[in-house]
Image 1: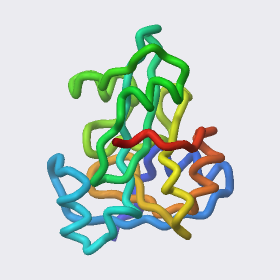
Image 2: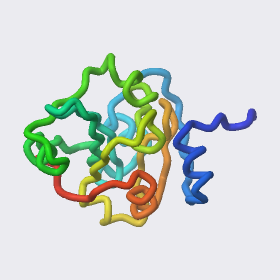
Image 3: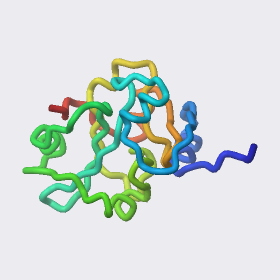
Image 4: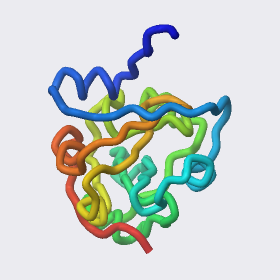
Amino acid sequence: MGKEVKTNAMRILDKNKIEYELNTYECDEFKDGITIADQLGQSYDQSFKTLVTIGKSGNYYVFVIPIDQEIDMKKAAKAVGEKNVEMIHVKDINQVTGYIRGGCTPIGMKKMYKTVIHESVRNFEKVIISGGRIGVQILIHPEDLIRVTKADVTDVIK
């Protein structure tokens, strides 16, 4: 087997000496988090997706929420001090984050955007996030995720 090609997220975790586990699975195209969790027998509550928004100010914001939940745009805007926020277009994900749809993780984006993680993250010993490309997941302690992304933790779901 070849050497694992590290994503930017993995390099940042390594550089910060943060422990994490990798989980890889076969997948060659975008599949939503629920489909992947079902395929791998993972808990929806423990699996988090990364959403990228843009505020009225033109600033980008990252929200990390359980895969089976929907972001509440009013709560999200309030959490980042904006009048409102809206999802960025799928075509803009790579340009804004450096990642692709289905492989977007809050760790190691092109810039350090203000990040908010849903408060349920603290209910688990480890949470599952994307590893920075399709077919790769990172299992990480919530406090390490919060620290490395400099995230605020609050309720931002419907």
